Image 1: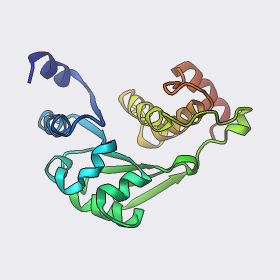
Image 2: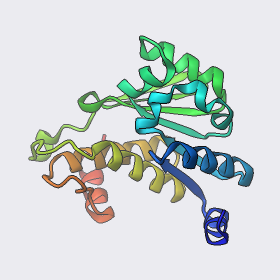
Image 3: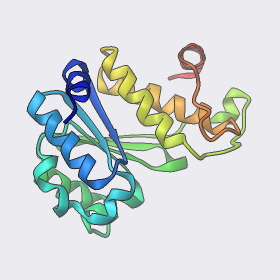
Image 4: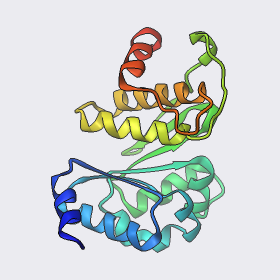
Length: 190
């Protein structure tokens, strides 16, 4: 590994690994565990390999993030409940975040489940324009708020709001600024 990359990894608070090539994912996940960094992994298309392919690397994960379809494919199961059970067996300390599209998200931690509905854009005077990138906005915001010192629940709520605001924009990469996110969060969060 290049010294610059080692230095970068050594100085980070959280490693957010989103959909890299297979060999890169395994190396980053292993390095995160070695450095004892908080690691969030969103495998994306790598779910096609199945969870068995990554069992060794999953043990040190703090967060696994998938959408509902990816969760079923990755675990090789038929229901989300079966998937969560399989993930917990592979990495008992890992927290699991499953994005559910327009239905919101589900968060699993030590056998407990939290489900939260998506933010209602109509109540904010907005409408859905483009949902491409909403999951990425959610994950990026969640990770950023974790690094800022927020607990899981508050970081999840901010991520949920960011995904909703992204859906109200035509751009694929139209995530809100922190200022915009905070304004809407203060005004519309329960």
